[in-house]
Amino acid sequence: MEQQVSAGIIGTGSFLPDQVLSNNDLEKLVDTRNEWICARTGIQERRIAQEDVSASDLAVEAARRALKKSCLSADRIDLIIVATITPDMFFPSTACIVQDRIGAVNAAAFDISAACTGFIYGLSIAKQFIKTKTYRYILVIGVEVMSKIVDWSDRNTCILFGDGAGAAVLGPVDPQRGIRFSQLKSDGSGGDLLKLPAGGSKIPCSQHSLDNGLHFLKMSGKDIFKFAVKVMEESTRDALKSCGLEVSDIDLLIPHQANLRIISSGAKRLKLPLEKVWVNIHRYGNISAASIPVALDEALSSGKIKEGSLVVLVGFGGGLTWGVNIIRWQ
Ligand code: UT7
Image 1 (cartoon, rainbow, N blue to C red):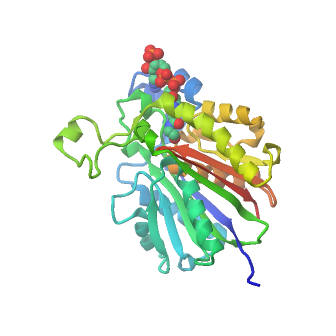
Image 2 (cartoon, rainbow, N blue to C red):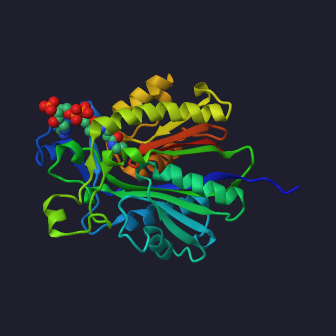
Image 3 (cartoon, helix red, strand yellow):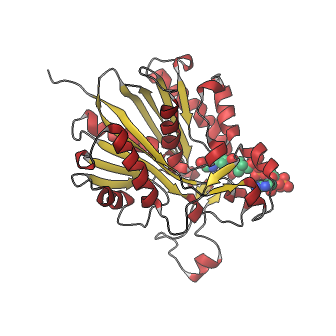
C-alpha cells in the first residue's frame, strides 16, 4: 500500500519594518489618544514600511528566513503561495515577484485574496498539494503593507493597522503529525463591511475615485467586531469537534490579531486561559494576512511550541472569510 503523508510546517520566518509608529505619534496625525487606543484595541505601536518598500520586499525577507530555518535552498520549493490584500500590483502576482527574487526557479507561484484569513487559506491549499504528493515543499507567505491603503486622516481605521510579513515552509511529515484539520469558510453577503472600493474593474482609478478617497480601506468596525468574536469561538469549537478534540487539548491558540478585546472575548467564550493564547497585537497592530505567520514564528522562537504540541490557528476578516488550521507539531 502507498505510504500516507501529512503536511507540516518545517520552518518559519518573519520580517517587520524597523520604523515604529506609536500611539503618541498618531495623536499628532488624528484626533485620538493613546489611552483610547490602548483601552479599545490593545495596540501600543505598529511597524510602518518606508515609502519605497512594497509587499514583495517584506515577503522576500520573511521567505529567506523561513528557508534558512527549514535548511532548504530556494530551488527545492515547488510552489509559492502569497496571501495578501496589498500586492505590489494586480499582476504579475507578488508570488511570482518573490519567486524570481529568491531564486525559486522550480516553483509555480500565485497569490490568494482572503484578507486577514489569507494565511489560513494558504496553509489549507498547500496541505492538499502535499497530501496528494503533487508537490513536496511549499512556501506560504502572509504579507501586508496596510500603511499604503489606510486613510491616515480616518481615526476609525488608521490606528489599527501595521505592516509586516510572515512565511512558512511546508513539507511532508509523519502521518500522525502536521496539519490535522483545516476548515475554510466565507460569507460574501458581508463583503461591504470591510473593503477597498476602488482600483479594480468596478471602480477603476479616476479623478472621482481619488477625490472621494475610494482607494482607502473602509470598515464597519462594530459589525466586524461582533462577527470576529462569534467565529473565533464557533469555528475553533467546530474544528476541534471534527478531530475529536476538546478546548482543553489546545496547547497554544494563535488567533488573528485584530483587537485585544476580540481575542480576550473569544478566549473567554472558549473558556481557554489567556496563557494559552498568543498575543502580540500591542507591538504590531493588525497586519492582516501577516498576523498569524508572524505570531507563529514568534511563538516557535520563544519555545512555547514543542514537539507534540496542539496548535490551533484561527483567522477571520474581509470577504467575509474565516478559517481554522489544527496542527500537531512535528
Ligand atoms: O482584521 C479584521 C478587521 N478589523 C477588525 O477586526 C476590527 C474590528 N473592530 C474593532 O476593533 C472596533 O470596532 C474598533 C477598534 C474599530 C472601534 O472600537 P469601538 O469600541 O467599536 O468604537 P466605536 O466605533 O463604537 O466608537 C466609539 C467612539 C465614537 O465616538 P462617539 O460617536 O461615541 O462620540 C468614535 O467616534 O469612539 C470614537 N473613536 C475614537 N476616539 C478616539 C473612534 N475611533 C477613535 C479613535 N480615537 N481612534
